[in-house]
Image 1 (tube, rainbow, N blue to C red):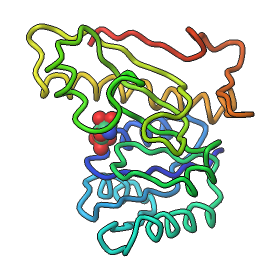
Image 2: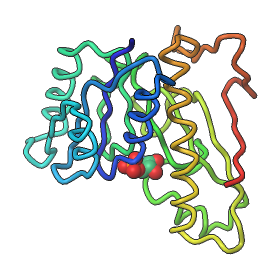
Image 3: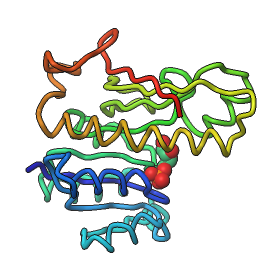
Image 4: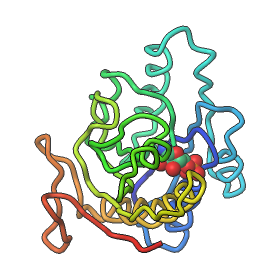
Length: 216
Ligand code: GRF
């Protein structure tokens, strides 16, 4: 049973999907800590309702990014997690902490990286009339939204799509692919070694990553 920490900033719908997959024994692991930088994050309530320990690290109470990162690093080290998942965690982490955990910290990002790192990805995709869009799950590096890719989920953008419909469609595929990737990591079928993501032979990859096309 792997020990998982989830970092959030908001609604925590992805956290909910991960907890569900653990409860159903799809993931051989348990979410043993949820950390939020936002004291009002709804995800904190989701965690508490499942009796999962929560910690709020309100970034506004720290003098610098380093102080925030150091406190976070301290908590994560103390608990010795197998996996740390940034699921809608809207803080940029610095080089020291990302180096420390680079083989066990993964991030969910709502775009097909390397396209559209950063914020407001759905707005940008629609504005640029992109035909496809999606999500990326990657190991974290010290560059924003740029660590080694594990998986991408792809949707087609429809003529009728708005930011709201894309947000909803993207959430659907996040709630499928993120628990899936976490399951494989907990089963040690995906791991990070020598600077590369490694997959066991029974996992289908395309150009070195998992690619899943969705019709949602
Ligand atoms: C997700 O769409 C994630 O990709 C983005 O923020 C959203 C978080 O959603 N970075 P939730 O908090 O898991 O509901």
